[in-house]
Image (cartoon, rainbow, N blue to C red; front, top):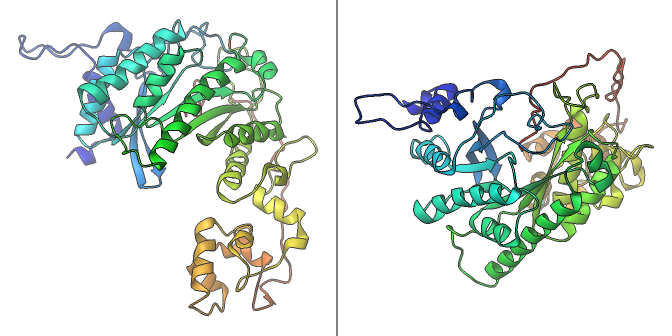
Length: 425
């Protein structure tokens, strides 16, 4: 059965569909063109992948397709940079659509995530992306989820068309400041990227407003209303976490942005930054956690606690760091505290806070076991809570001591990579 087929075999079958179709012509097999014959090599960045995406309506299985890993830009950190020796691949729009629709027909995926290198003028690349969307939406009437990563520097009409046909549009900003971006990507302009992002963002906001006013949704022309995303490479530039959080907050305030992506820098072989140190993976995690605090927990950017260098402390998650910095706010009484106070307690997320508020009116909460049953991570929350005036722990918080801190590089071996795991989020 298809469901039991290994992922590698699924991808092999799909790649075969990009070849010339010789069925009915003497029984010849499909033959991959030269531009696709090295697609499975690691250096080629493997143009196909399937991953699970968690959304508000449950898990969605997305097929990620890299249209091409050829690129005319020479960014110092990127595995696809122009001067790097590597096998290059290219899927044409018609091939890409045929592959995705077959995977969808077989039940291997329910949506598409489309990204690409920039081999030449951005306007030509955008034309190819738009062709894919028009084939899916107009010709094949595909009404499912499609996330497209657009390229900076496109024409206004191209951005409008792409956004109109996509469920979600994203764009790589890479760095929060133009001067720092120029250090690692001298051919790119942050102002150009922000202009493209802002044009798409305004369209998304307008589409959402029209839907809120009663205009029926059109699944074939969703208008990017799932919200935009943007990506930053963390640690490739000297920018602090404070600067990153500030830029993200600034963009959120304008509306239309769903969330940000953060990718910890990894030194790539045969690039100018091959010898640069990798960013701690935990730094990426802390930025994502901070992003959740801003979007889902009611925190303001001015409440985030940074260290003396403007970075997020790695030893604790940002909510715990904030709680430890504000002892006057704790302990919180479980039976009477409002949702806004409960959700700020380490170990209590929005879901658990809502359940606590709902259940305490009809159930008597007596113990940590009762709180665990409502989704509270009591090993983290107990020291910050009281129940009917009684403290759960005499010691509010304890930190385990280790030989090295979370951000200590002592004795760490320098690894280089062929591909950065976060390159194509």
